[in-house]
Each structure stands twice: as structure tokens, then as C-alpha cells.
Length: 618
Picture (tube, rainbow, N blue to C red):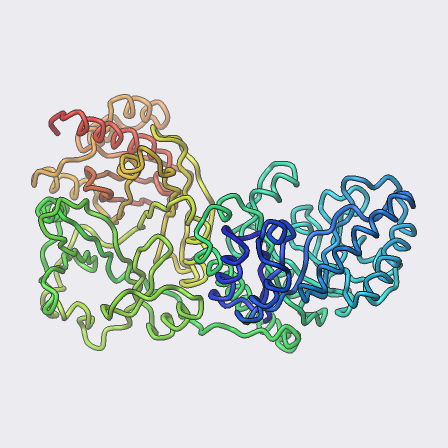
């Protein structure tokens, strides 16, 4: 599939954008007029630079407010358009994006629109270029792609076709079915954008909140299936207006964009194949990624710390035991409880905060998982420590396969034998892992786990905290064996370090007897995160709990929630640097995350950090 990206998607200078697009593997770029206007390089130099980088220059954009005007104004518009055609000749670009008129149209007449487009086409023919007419979702008289195509058909000129932009189509709720009925030779260009569903005016939504495919809520796979059936064989390009992208590192944004198109190409290929329509994708030259079997769960979670004694103590209090030290890298040790494994990397007595560093997914074919990851341009894990790649936030994502014997190969490196794995445990698994994301990497990370491990992005949730509004993205594997919560961390600033500590990440363990876990932990001296009395008063008002049960919750600093399907009990440890542990018991079919109790937890963690700042004993 030929891929392109609009320079407006990226931060930096035009030269930096071209380099980033080439390095990310795009075939071409769209030149946004402002990027050219502010560049110190001539059109000829830009043309040569793109050629040197192996990039085609696919589109010049945008040209605005041409049609639907009186003749005098139209003549002025044609003079302006011819100047752009001459510029395109210097750049070596053969197609211009013409947006439906928003600001100056005063005559609502399709015949007039078509006549004026035909005259523009005649001018384009003299310069050997083409016009791709696009219906803006907020166009004055033309605001849907089918209307734009009808105008193009009325214009009836070989140099005039249409541009399909998924944002302008899907933001208005238009069906994409009609895409496949447009003749392929009338589709001059295709632009893709995803977006979250928001309740706001379409213009503001478009200008600030577009995201790459797979990072929003639009059904782009369905659009691509219709596009494939049309026989279109041109570039598939990204046009993303996003405030975060314009501030983020240009190279990683370009890679994120290329990854999104690779993921969409794979999804489209599978959708067509599953429908028995694989031949429909031949014009677009769709190529699938290596298939990866569904993950069987988390084999281990890795953490690193400069406070080893403190971290070991908390794990012991939760019932974990030391399994062993790595044979060749003794700074690594594994702690186990039943089938749950935590690998600790000792950073020495540095006082460095304890933090989550890696997730190891168990998969039937680690080599295929790694091949898929590399196909999605994920950054390899440094060195030769394990098969895996780095997530956008730096978390290492590792892959292990089925154990050849009773003990996984990686675990045998810690000196573990079969007899070491048979202990009965109160903690039975990892319920979920919560990873805090820098705001500029949040959308990228959602796509990373969606495309790499086929995790499904489900509902989002928001709740208040002392440091601001927190937003969580829930992600699950289809078999529900892996669950991640991706949380937007507060923006960096003067309080950057404080804010990171005030919204720590965590590992949540499952149990079938949370009271037993809590009592054992308390006997071993665990410092629970304190729960205020006001919480229990509110709990009783909401649920009318049995007084004995409520007393047990109070005594053990347990939190509680309930819905129509079941109950949810959990407790939190104190914070270890930038992370903590949670223990959960799910009763019945409760599928939430304790989000109703999150504000209690965040307030308690905030108070503890403020107390530490003031030197208050813990």
C-alpha cells in the first residue's frame, strides 16, 4: 500500500518533516502550503531533497474558496489558482487539494460549481496537473463526499476528481458505502484521520483532535474495505490536525503514523480475506503482518528499584517468596507466589524509586510476536536480554513461549525447579497493570498495544483527584487474560516529579480470599494505604452493608464496590516510589476496576507525599 503523510501532521521545519517521514518509511508526503511558505529553501531544493530521501511529493494543499462566487471573484480566484499550479510545477507535484468553499460562496448552484470546476480543470490541463475536490464537513454548500462527487461528475473534466477524507465523512456520520461506487479514476486522493467521539463543533474537533488510525473511534477498516472495492490504487495519506502532535518529537510522531497505516493495512487485508474478497485488495497492494496468537497472559511483571529492602519487604508481606537470583545477572531476582512472578532489577543503594519496567507476555509463538512488533516499527529492547520491544513510554514488552518442560526456560535461569512451583497461594494471578502515560504518548501507546498484542481498547473513565482530572483507557485481550489500564499522567512542569509520584502506577493481584491476604499482610507489618472514616460512612449509606461485614472492611482498610453483576473488594499498599500494589477479590461477574474508589486512593497518596515533603513521620 502506497503511504503518504501531510507535513501538517508533524512538528519542526519542512526539512525535518521530510527527513522524519522518510526515516519512518513513508513513500511520499503532502506539502502543506504554510510549511512551504515559511521554508528558506526554494521549491526546486525541496523537490530535490525529497527525491534524495526517496519521497514522492503527492499533493499540494490546501486551495480554498474557489467556487460558488460571482464571475469577477472567480476570475481573481483563477489567477490565484494558476500561481499555485506554477508553484506545483516547480515542486514536481501533480495534484492540488481544492476544498469546498467555506468563506466566500454566495451562490448555491451545482451547475455553477461544476462549470467553475471545469474551467479550473482546463487551466490545470495547461499546467499538466490535477484538482482533487474535497467536501469539507463545514462547507458552505458542499459538505458531503457524495455531493462533491456529483459536482465532479457534472464538471466532466479529466483533470478534476475528488479527494476522500475520512474525518469529513465520518465526523458527520455519513455512511461510507457509496465510496465503492465512485469510479477509481475519479478518486484522485485519499486522506485518513481517526478521532475520538466528542460533542463539539466539527471545525474545532477537526482542527485540534484528530488522531492516527486506530487511536480514535472511527471505523476506518470499513472505509478501507469500500475503498479497496472501488479499485483505487493511489496513495493512502494521513492528514492529522492535533495540538499534541505539533509539540511532540517529529521522528516518533512519524513512526507512530506509519505504524497506524501498517496496522490499518493489516486489518483491512484480514477483513477482506474473511469476507472472501481478498482480490479486492490487489489494487491497493495490501500486505498483512505476521499473525500472532492471542496472548495467554502475563508471564511476569518486571520492576526496578534503588530501595531493594523496602520492596522485598512489601512483597514478603503480601505472601511472595524469593525464588532465586539470575545465574548470569545477579542484580535480577524473581519473587513468586503460585503462578504470579515479579522480577526485580536491583539498581543498587541509590534510593531510586521503585518503578514498573517490563511486561512479559506469554504467547504460543514469541518469534512471530517479535516479527509483528518489528513490522510495526517498535523499538527493540536494548542489548540481547530478551525477545521484545519498547513501548512508547519506555516499558519493555517481552515475549515468552510455552515451557518445554514444567519450568519456563527464563525461570530456570533463576535456579527454579519444578518442586519450587507447587506452593499453594492466596494470591492467584495478576488482575491488571496500570501504566501512567505522558500526555504526548497516550494515543501512541493505545495504538501500540492494540496493534502489537491485539488488546481491545474499551471504555474510558474519568475521575477527579487532588492533582487534576485523571483519564483511564481500559484495554483487554479478547480472552480477558491480560488487562491494562493506561492513564494520562499530569503534564510536566515545575511540579513534574511531584505529580509523577502523586499519580503512581500499580500492579493489581487477584485473590479468592482478600480478608486472609489482608490479615496475613497486617500481621507481617504491611503499611496499608489508610482509608478515611468518611468513606465507610458513605459506603454504608450507599449499600446498607451488614454491620459485621462493614467492620471487617474498616479493620482491614478494605474498599468495596458493587453492581448488578457482583462485588469488588480491594486494598492498596503504600507507595514505593512511583508504584504500589493492589489486591483484588472479584465476587460474581463484577468487571470494573474500582474506579469509584480511585479518588479515595489518590487523595490518600497525595496526603502521604505532602507529609513526606513536610517531614511528617510515616
